[in-house]
Length: 153
Length: 153
Image (cartoon, rainbow over all chains, first blue to last red; front, side, top):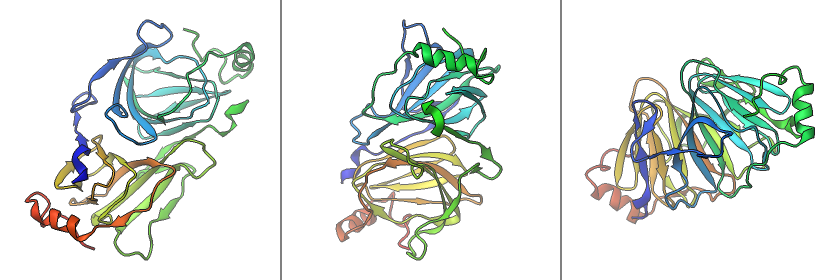
């Protein structure tokens, strides 16, 4: 039967999954702070054109301020998140779904007291994140919604 | 700014989302029973190579017994689900993640008393589901795990 590779990742306490290793993320790069990653779908020979990862940002932590052509789809799973996307900010709670369009500058922040956990779906074939340019930064500072909310480091 | 199409679908009571319409699913085909669908990502001009949908199977309902080359990734969001996949059966609870491999015969069933809700991620470019052939059916009946569990209609 061709179903040999089907599998269930059982949810375990603390938002971990059976047969999924926790990875340290972008270690040493410095612009991600307090983030753990689990690759649920995408590193076991799947042929799907997407990957599914689970990230968790510790209280006070944040992701890189970046942009890329590939899209992000984010499903909040636990805690509270603040998403800087383009010139606006979204507050996220569990089960909220965020679509980040191509080349939209973005950053995810944990403003709360508990972990902010979310699924993130991306194309399996995707471009590398890029730093924002001076024009992007000017727009972030020109918007009253994003000015003072995003983080540089 | 290129972020014009970014958007947040806020989770609303009853596992609905802002700016997402509930669709009737495979209406008239008859082999899906008691299912609602929401397309969260995939029908608004996105370029991502995947679609994200939310399905809900009413108590006692089930999806088609089918197979296809494209993979399914299922994230349980609410309730309890029973997944027939190949020659085995998985019981699903919220946050469990199921990977259904290419051409694995499968069916999702709601054995519980409350709605079984789940996200389902698929390639945007995908083949049509096919009915099982006699060999597939023989295997379902040959496995003590699946015999008597799957549903024909």
